[in-house]
Image: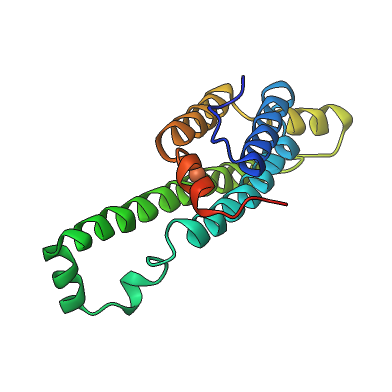
Length: 171
Ligand SMILES: [Fe+2]
């Protein structure tokens, strides 16, 4: 696969490149280990991205759903600024839950592969090889992971200008 669209936030773009590299490795190896590597890289990247967005874009929404009373939410919804606030809170919630969904899909696939019985009926070399071959990640699943990642980047990772405007420039 090629690169995903740039956010112009250099650390996030570097991490997206690392995600793409891990996905390309998965395309060629189709192994349990390469899938595990995609999970690790996604987890690290999503955590960094969520911390960055909470620091510069969503600083008022991190705990809003837990700490706000129902009345405060109603008041927010009635006011114009409350309307904008709700849009931000919804964007944060749907962006971060899309991260969770992708992580969940990778975890489920890894555990499905783990559950393939090891060396059923014996331990000859050919049985061991057959067992390893059965742990090949399907092209269908890989395609889905890539489509999800690209769609996510186009839909949610468009925060570049806002983050750059809010974040102090590095010396
Ligand atoms: Fe994201």
